[in-house]
Amino acid sequence: MAVEGNVNEGDLAAAVKAMEELVDEAVQVYEIDKEKTNVIDDLYNSLKVITSYLGFSIDLHPSLLNLSEHTRAMLTPSLDILIIKPNFKSEQKRFDQLTLDETTNVLRYAIPTIINMARSDRMIKSKKISFLREGTKKLKRLPSSSAEDMIVTDTSVQVEKA
Image 1 (tube, one colour):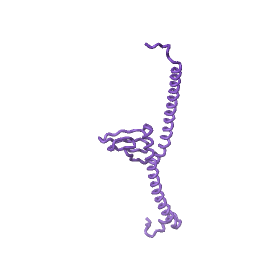
Image 2 (cartoon, helix red, strand yellow):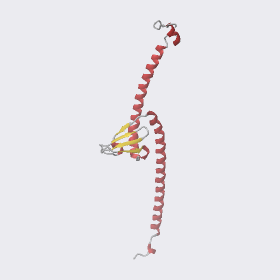
Image 3 (cartoon, one colour):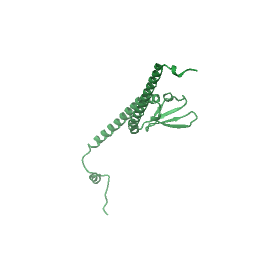
Image 4 (cartoon, one colour):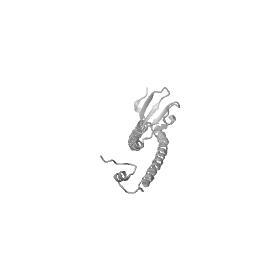
């Protein structure tokens, strides 16, 4: 049997120092996890305002979420991820419930896609507004008379007295 008195004080000091380092590392990991949660919450809330306003849904490649190739995934405007499995069953995940890797993958893919969709939507709306503006400008060239004057002076409308 080993005698407890033979324990080297240097070994004990090293073990205590190692435990202190372990506690320090654990505290730092805890703080980083807490910060990660806060950052993802802020990102989620800010991005949700934009995506809800724009109203776009985006098909995501299943590999972005570590899903099988035969699975379909879609990011909705409310930042829910709709997952349709090969057996046609579906599940829904909130964006802020993804892992860090999944979050990063989805953002790297979705942000440029949303930008392109918004740009395209803006261009279409601009063309339609230009068309309406031009039509309004053409209509304003009519003589300035009220609608009642136009009806009374219109020769195609005959008024009979009773």
